[in-house]
Image (cartoon, rainbow, N blue to C red; front, side, top):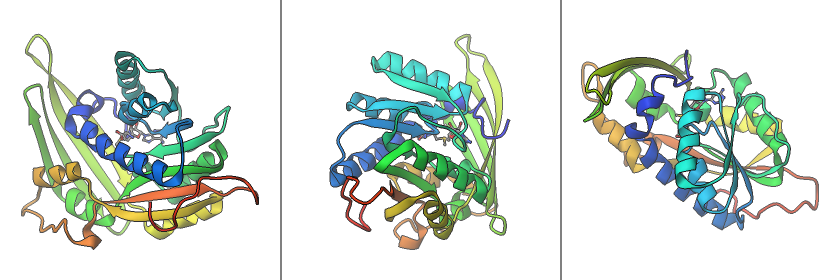
Length: 283
Ligand SMILES: C[S@@+](CC[C@H](N)C(=O)[O-])C[C@H]1O[C@@H](n2cnc3c(N)ncnc32)[C@H](O)[C@@H]1O
């Protein structure tokens, strides 16, 4: 089923997710330090295989990891157990969830928000996040930019091969609708040496800055800062991707070709509520 990662889960961590989350935790650490936000209650939305949730739990956060994929959550659970940290895992849709206790921090990384199919879904997700945060609490996330979809999705074929897996991702992107589709066909090596085939389809939507700002405004979330972001691991992807029929002309040093945008939002609070102090415009 689309966007459930039921097949791709098996190779997800070996296809860049661990390295990406190392970059994500640096972002979270820097923003928390800059905002005077000490470890408290955190929700990692669309937590996937739990890399960020487990890292935050190790740093003293009380973490809830939420995802709608049972396959991804099973790997997350095993990772937390192996690390000896307590994380609460919730199988739920990010477009409509509630928490019993307000969170100080909500995170949502690795273009998870791009998995939402439409503006209305982004708005529903932001409303759930706003309701889950305490006044002044922060919402940190990345989204993939149009430059990312044009350079890594539009008519691109990706091949990933290691000793224990092989997969192809055939990507398309329609700039008119803002929709990208990634069709994955792969093989994982079993202990008996035979290979097991899997297939998965991931659909993403490119959201403009204005669409994100509008969803934030309507949900009672204020934009504290936003910046272009191209983590090194994302450039690994660029090296592996091949545009059909030619190699993309991509200049990662150009500001308008950042693959991602990093956002810091804050739940607006009643006058006098004490939220963390963030410098406007610098996450
Ligand atoms: C690219 S992965 C990112 C996972 C994780 N945040 C990370 O950094 O590795 C996207 C995740 O979003 C989850 N997801 C997609 N749509 C969702 C939805 N509507 N509600 C909850 N999770 C969703 C998928 O199951 C998948 O685990």
